[in-house]
Image (cartoon, rainbow, N blue to C red; front, side):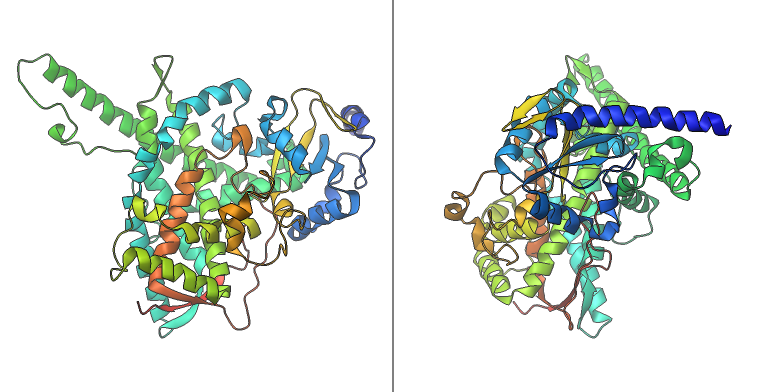
Length: 511
């Protein structure tokens, strides 16, 4: 047994060394941290809570582009904006990195993970479901759930005699869950009123677990992973998520089939009727799932599995990312009274003496200053702090030869805080996003929604939800800092989050 194990390890090491060397051979001109057998340069990931800072420090030590190895592969990390632009717009780097493989069991070949040809077809097929006319119809969902958010926040404040400390991330995360479930699936989760939902737990667990996979070599092989308690929690979470989505798909497909059969029967009768949804007692739905059920590729409808991949992808990409952006933006607003005053001034110009009025899509378009505030919040706290691509064909850039199979990491958080891109990068200044200011910057200096071919298809949806929620909160509450000021602890994760909450003070605003 010992001999067999030793031979296996030796063979794996030889293969690892050959693969790594073939990639590193073209990166000789680059510097980088030391590499160790099997784990590569993974030692810089520990402690995990310090990884974001460590990767940024490596740029300062080794330059804008440096090389490093990770288990089973090697690659480069770059904040060189010209190279970043090439990577995000080139067909040679259109596929996502192997690092995303740990999302595969949950998201399958959905839009986030699908490769080249399949991705292009899916993107073309799904893009119409994000048309502005469809998105505008989601505003009523935001209004309903944001009203509940305000009520829940007020209850929390009342328990503290009207002026207390609130972990805004907790409340916003639940509101965002309700928004994404209703807009994606057309059903109500009511997470804000029942935060013990299994689906809520499963979504949070799967999102947080992805990064643990990346930095823990034990989880790379199923043979060792199955002996960890995390594996069995993952199986439980996946079962909850997939069962919920699939049962909803089957129910809605059956309802759609019955609806279509009813229409066909009436078409073949002599009765003169109005063939619309309301006639048959069916309220027209525009949820993402409903649209996918009616989508075809080459005349064929998407399978249940295809639809589940895209719905789950929308859930993953549109929940924690949006809730993180809202929470950190409110945190920034609480720290800057001057910014908060300008937001309220803009809100008063829109809502006049009706602060409780539901927001409309036209109102959201008029919130120009609030949009700059949100963008500055995303600059300081990008919801997705880094992205990675896989090289599918060799290419040259300056004096480096990037081989097929190379992983390229783009640390967005570092780009956003690079003094070469933003003056006084640690300062919160929404005016950076005035049109005149933006025109002077490199087009790839600000990447909260990625960029290029695989930019975030839901970024307009996200901006609408962020505006609607922050507008509602600011119209009803004055935000302030805790004493002493709360400092967020930001461990490395696939989606930025604070392990100690996002605490601010809130009190009812006198409009």
